Length: 479
Image (cartoon, rainbow, N blue to C red; front, side):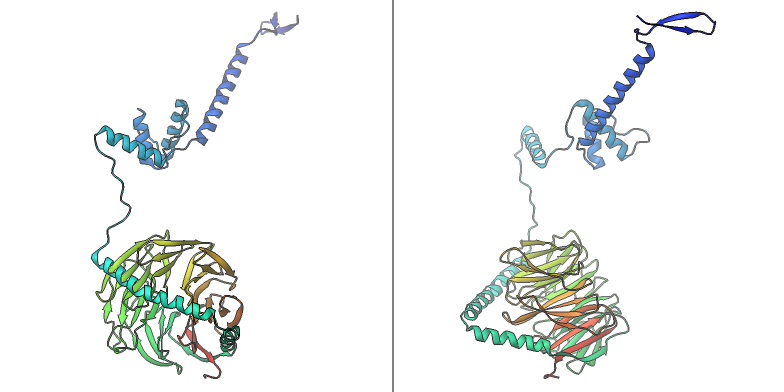
């Protein structure tokens, strides 16, 4: 039994028993217990899933009988208050799953005496779209059959014949030289395209002008005026050269304007309205009847040129669509977006049949190989990926350039082709098809290369650059 002597203010000695609990210690213990309880509640609140939408938070507060909004309370404070209420009620989560929401809807519908109706996740197409799908199916099936028949014939050919044709392609590439360099405009060139007959070259620039040039002399033929914004792309129709008065050339710009031109006029002969934002790229269907446009509103569109009408407005990307390419058969369409993904669409059914992910940054270009089952994509991550449509995956990644790949394009026959890439590092490169080995580096531009194109007969390769010039590359024997 211990005692402690304490002297108070009056000077008298008093004795205090240490074993007797003090009132102060009791208050401290109660405060500590309260703090531990608050910490436990905060820990539970951190693990509780609460809706992030303020409207749903208000609905849950109203259902629980609490005030929907307090004075001076914002969305964050309201959400924290809902968490605290859920912790006090002993609930684990404040979010309902999609399955639980469907079950709740079914219960409500049964209570109200109504049958639960399935939700519709598609829009009904027009008659023009149906006719377009039938046309594409009838057009693509014979071409696919012919391609497969040609593949079987190539398979039984002698190995010496295959090797000789492959050597011809390599010989053409190794003997490429810069035949001509021409100033294309007063502002950077953004695109170039060679006509199917290999006699004309079309260039587009940031000044809004489209210019035609004669090949191989590179003499100026005409200047097409009609755009105000920067030209995104200019492309020849597969039927170009059949009728000079018919529309055989299309171009798009940053203002969303799509113009169609003929070889006999410097003014647009037709315009495709309806784009409310930038159109990055456009391309013709192999039949020449349809035109596809890639838009910055996260969608791409299909136009029937015979009717001068939009037949399909397709969404699917989470970012702007920057590039698109039609399959040689005419059945598929590939789109690349700034969301770093590439999608392959079946034009006959409207379904997205492939979702290709693997690039780390934006997909700036895509193109189908002549063999029909390879797809190349160029990206802002400085690489070019090769996808096998039969295996639904990437089979090779080409570390192509030291800067972003702005354009990629296959050229040649189905079994002796090459891959062309252009980059911001100021070069364009030629790669072997199926070996993916570097064959040639086309250097000479003073600035980034914006686009590259090859003629159908493999006579010419053209590069367009930010330095306002385009260069013509050809075989020494041809020059």
